[in-house]
Image (cartoon, rainbow, N blue to C red; front, side, top):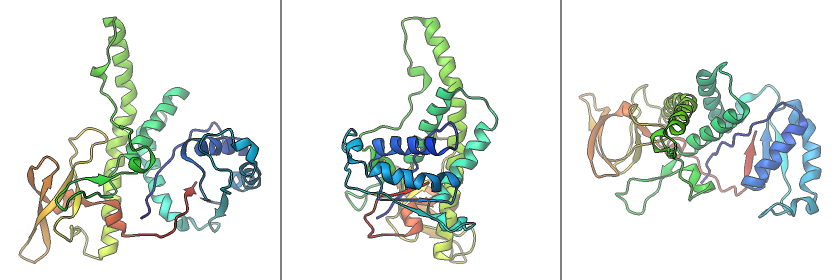
Length: 293
C-alpha cells in the first residue's frame, strides 16, 4: 500500500542554502528518504551534488537520533516542461496552494504566525481518512496519514474557550488573539476540505468511467466520507454503506450509511465520497521511502 503525506517547510528564500537547511530539518524529523523526486528548478539541481556529499558524511549524521548513514538519497528530476509527470504528488500540493492563496492572500503575517499556520495546515492535511481500517467487517474507521507518521498525536486544536489564566484580562486578550489566529486556519479547512472531496470524486469518476454525478459506492460495507459543511475543522465523519438505493433508471441515487456511533443515515450519493485509496485503487510493492518536492 502507498500513501502520500505533505510536509510543509517554511524557508525565507529560494536559495540552495535554504533548501539544504530545509532538507536537514526534514530528515531530522521524518527520517531519510531513499529517493527525492523534484521538478527542474535551478535550486534543486544546484543542491543535488551538495546534498549527496552531505548525506554521505557519516560522521555528521551520527549527531541525528535514529538516523542511518547507510541510506543514500537518490535525486530524480521530472522531464522539463512536463509537469503532468509529477501528478502523483502535485495534485495534493496544488490543493494546498489554491486554498492557502484564497485564505491568506496578501494578509500580512508575522514569521511566527506564518510558521504556526503552516504547521496547523499540515495537521489538517494529515487528518484526512485514506483507507478503511477494519477490526471487524462492520467497523467504521479509517487509517489517516498521521497514523503512519505520529500514531499517538492528536490533531484536534483546542478552541479558545479552553484557555485559562489567573488574570481575567489576560485570558480575555489571549482569547481574542487566539480567535484572530484561527481566522486563517478555519477558512483554509473549509476550502481545502471542499476541494479535496471534489478531487476524490473526480479520481473515482475516471476510474469507474460512469456518467458525471453518478459516482457511487460500489459495494455494501464500503467506508465513505459523509460530506457535512456544518462540522468544525479536521472532522471527517465516516459511514459504512449498508444499503444502496437506485432510481427508476437503475442508477444509484442514495445510500443508507451507519456512522461510528451506530446512527443510521440516508444520504444522496453526492454527499458520499470514496476514501483516497478506494478512489485511486493503486497499490505498490515498492518499499522505497520517497520524497517529492
